Length: 111
Image 1: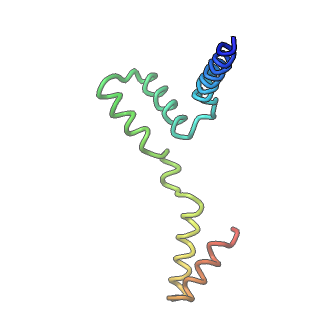
Image 2: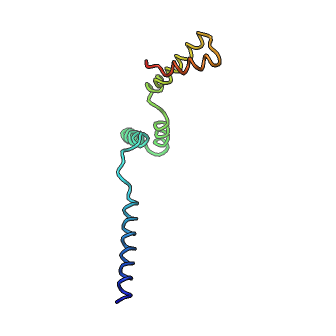
Image 3: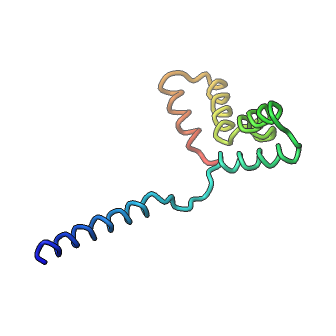
C-alpha cells in the first residue's frame, strides 16, 4: 500500500501534464491576416472564372503578388508626402544639415 500511493500520484501527474500539453498545442482562433484574406479572395475569383491547372497557378501568382491598380498607381500618403517634401527641398536648394532638418520638419507636419 505504501508503494501504491506514490505510484498513483506520479501517474496522475503524468496524465495531467499530458492533458495540458495537448491543450497548449491547440491553436487559438485568430483573425486572418491580410495575406490570408487576399488568398481567400484570389481563390474565390479563380473559382468563379473556372481556372484550372497552369492557368490557375499563373492567375494566383499574379493575384497574390500585385496590389489593386488604384492603390498601386496612387502610392501611400507617406510616399506622397516624401515626394512633396523632396521637391520643396530641391526648390529651396537645401543641402546637408539644413536639408535634413527641413525634411524632418516637413515629414512630421500634419497635412
